[in-house]
Amino acid sequence: MSTPKFRSIAQRLVRHTVWLALLSVAVVLAVQTWALWHQHRNRLAEVVELVGSTHVPLLGVALWDIEPRAVQLQVKAIASWPEIGYVRLRASTGQVFEGGDLRLADTPPTQTLSISAPQGGLPVGTLELVGDPQYLRDTVVHNALQVLLGYGLFTAVVCVLIAVLLRRELHRPLQGMAQFAAQLTPDRLMAPLEIARVPRQGHRDEIDVLAEGFGKLQAGLRGHIANLDSLVAERTRQLEELVQEIHRLSMTDALTGVYNRRSIDERLPSEVERAQRYGRPLAVLFVDLDHFKQINDTHGHPVGDVVLRHMAQRVRETLRGGVDWMARYGGEEFLVVLPETTLEAAVATAERLRECIAAESVEAAGGLVLRVTSSFGVTVCRPGEDSERLLSRVDVLLYEAKLDGRNRVAFSA
Image 1 (cartoon, rainbow, N blue to C red):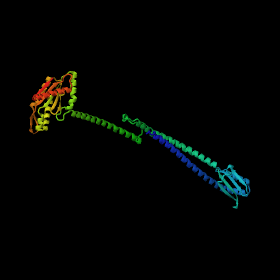
Image 2 (image 1 turned 180 degrees about the horizontal axis):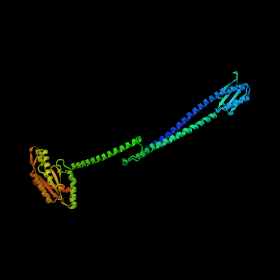
Image 3 (image 1 turned 90 degrees about the horizontal axis):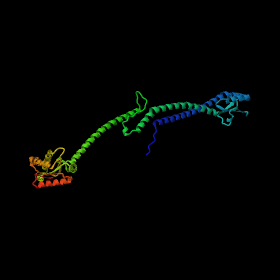
Image 4 (image 1 turned 120 degrees about the horizontal axis):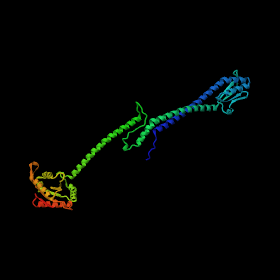
């Protein structure tokens, strides 16, 4: 869809003002012409009445006394009136006297007067008067030009003044606002709106109100954006915390609070890779609670959950914070990873954990007190060995410890 062509409001107002002014001049000229035409008709009627009251009696005497020269002089005197273009007198004796513009002889008379004898006898002739059309045209044109020049000059001055006022008070401010709006982009949203206007004291108009309203809108947007930035920052922080919490929960066993099997799959390969790269020792312990299925079958799973939580808590308290870590492999089996730890140190740690678990009682609901033992498989990562092979070897060692009677530590390099 094509963009509509831009048209300035001020220029449209100037054009409309000029057209209305010209139309007003035309209307005034038409009314003045019509008035002049009627004025000429009234004037012609007055002239005819004057001729009838002054010249007709004299013509009656001249015709009665048969004085052709006097009649001709009277006819010429009547034709000298500017409103009368042609005069024809037809005497009852057949004589015809003419005066004025003979080219109007064939024009139908505007007015015909009867000439009576001095003593009120029979008519002695008729007087035909023809109005002067050229006089009418000249008079109308002359007056029309006067009206046109007078009103035209007045209208031109008014239009120029209106154009100057509109350009100063309307066109320039609106043009500035239109250019500002056309150049408005997100990065210029807070740019101030500046309008070139003559300073005024004590009053405002619509443009001032519009500019002030835009300034208020910018101030509101500025405050909203600032508040929005803080809200976004707060929401981002909350989202990051939530993501971290979700990640922590996804990597943590819900029952014991230690890492889960997924954490083993993600962290153990990294630990093995680091140990292999730098040639550092890495030990792993596989822990299994002895006869845990019997505890569940005898006392129920809630009691079994208490035992698992107790064992996990004791192991975590013994490990080095920030270095060693523990994960629930599945059921009652746990994996303990000891970076920077030799086989001898790992076996010592396993023995210490085994003794701690065996020495402490576990208190469950209803006053139930249990003692549990645990079996350990311990080994260290061999050169070139991956995490799967390492887990497989330590699982075999745990199985050997359980076969040897449980509550013991089986280890191998």
